[in-house]
Length: 97
Image 1 (tube, rainbow, N blue to C red):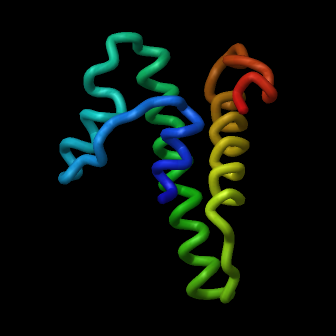
Image 2: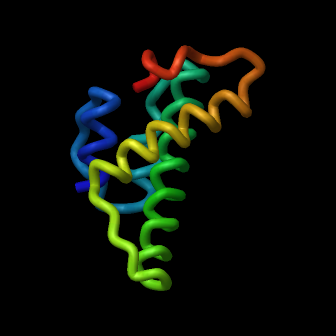
Image 3: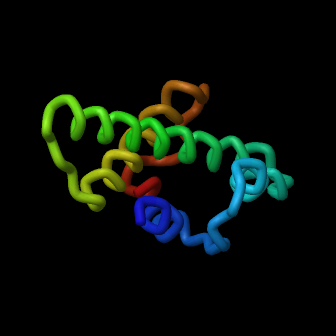
């Protein structure tokens, strides 16, 4: 479910991979544009980070987040990471969202 929210935001469609190797290929292996590939990897890492944090909050703090909240957190976090990683911002926040 989480990944469908992210893929919908990015406006891309692909079948959910069956293995970790296939997952790596889907998130950038076939993309020739280096900047676009790095952007997808950044968003993928932000998604994994938010899933991990949400899991820990649920286990240790009994805090439950809705999927929509998590997707919004991923959007904000990935935009903030892109600002810190790049010398020039990729776009304004409203364009990113």
